[in-house]
Each structure stands twice: as structure tokens, then as C-alpha cells.
Length: 371
Image (tube, rainbow, N blue to C red):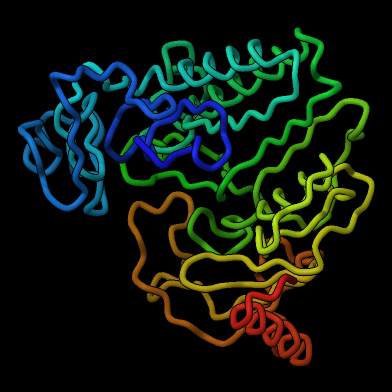
């Protein structure tokens, strides 16, 4: 199967081709499906049903997790229906409960194998993504249901990797970055009891919204850096986007990026290492259904993400279904230093700031100019 990770610079890859809620539910090692029997080829289609495997739409009685929202009703694997359909590849199909241990063992083996020379490891954990299926060691471990269990599992997997670096005396020479791709979502694609199990827990803490939304609960990510002897313990208010990894890590290792590569990436190495409290000058954020731009503590939202009727942000944590499409309104302006929950729209009081930030956002949209 190619092109894939090996064609964009990786020397070794052990992945699965989509998120766990999509088919095919198999691992791919380098260019090959792991454990595939040549006499039982694997077929995948996202447009219509193929093969004779039961699916969530026709055989809901076989499901251990009920999907919602009209998606994830394709082929049933391990009692869970997915987006899309697959047929064949029976000996290659993975078991959801074993994903975390399998990926972690592969990561640990890689570190052991490469410990005597420089290496880069990208460990993409699946744990907290739906369908949430904690392994035997973590089932029932938390007080927040299955969603809490898989968070415990993610924490455990990350801990095993850090412990390996310590055990092999690599910690002082290894930069570790732990982050995420979006804010929290409680119920997402399947009814797994996560909403009822929340109790008083607020997944986004003081922030407004969650996954999919333009608010800080959707766009502000967990971001932890560990590099003993190089990065001091503490917190930073520097503005950094994950798109900056390219320029920043290239700067760290003394590599010049090719002309035209990573045009949106900014070298924020001093901020990454905690040597400066200043990162980017500005950052464009994307959520449903609009964009926002950050300049320091100021945030301009280009049209509200409020939903019709309900007044809620699109897909806030805990919502059982997607709200109606939002109705765009005028720009909204927030000072996050004083209003982290984005409750006070200051656009009317700060018309000049709105005008300047809106102009910058339009310039970036129109020309691709690096902020």
C-alpha cells in the first residue's frame, strides 16, 4: 500500500489507515497489511456496502455500541459499526480493546532498537477517540465511565514511553512533546454512556465550547514539553500553533527547510524551550462554522458560532446531537486575559481593534501571508 508514511520521510511505520470509527480495521506495517491472508483479500468502500458482513444499519441487534447522528452505520467489527464498509481480511482485523497495548509495545520496541542513535518517534494514540474501548487493565479504573477509563489508559501509555526513556538514560537527550488535535467532546458518534458518567466534571474546564467549535474549548490544546536540563518546569502564555513544529524543530536540529515548504510555520524555538514568553504574533484558528484570529490575548471571531434556537456552540461537550446550523452574525471580540470563558463581546467598545484584526485575517485568507 503506497504512498504512505515511508514516502514522506519515515523509515518505519506501524499504523492503521483511518480513525478507529472508520474501516478498514487493520494495521499496516510499512507497505503491508499485518496478518493478511493472500487467499482472503481485503476490500474497502466508503460509498456503498460491499461483501456480506453485517452492518449497523441492517443489523442493529448485533451492536454493543449504538451510533447516533446518521453516521457510523457501516460494517460491524467487534460489535461496533463503523463509517464505510469492508469485506475480507478476517485474519488481519484488530480488536479494539488491544489497540493501546499493541501501539505502545511497538513504540517501546522502536525506542529499544534505535536507542544508540538519534531518532524521531511519532506516537499517535487512539485511546480517547471513539469508539472508546479501554483494555482489560483500564476498564472501570476511573470514576468517569468509559471516557475516563481511556484517559487513564492514555496516561498509562504515555507513562510507559517516558519510563523507557528514563530506564535507557535517554531522557536528558530527548525532547518530548505531548499534545492533542482538538478540544474535548463527550458524546461523539456513539452512545457510550460518557455524558451520564460525567458527574460534575467539566471536560473543557473554564473554556467555552469543545471539539468542532471556534471557542477556546475547541481550539486551545493540551501542550506539555519535557526535556530535562533544557526546559525548566513551569507554564507559558506564549502563542504557538502545531503548524509551527516544522520551522521550530528544523531550527532546533539545524536543518534548512526547502523553499516553499511549511509556508505557515513560524520558528518559535525560544518559546518552546521556555526561554521566551512570546511566540507567534498572531494565529488563525478554525472551528465550526467560521474562523478566528488571535493576537496575544485578543481574539476576533469572524461571525458567531452560536447555533439557531439553542444558543449553544456547535457540538459542545455533552450535546447528544448536532445543533441546527449556526446563523452568522457580526464580528465578536474577546480579551482572553480578562475573559477566558469568552462571555463578553467587546466588539462595540473596540471598533478600531476589530477593523485591524479583521483586515489581517482577510489578508492571510487572501494571500496566505505568514502572520
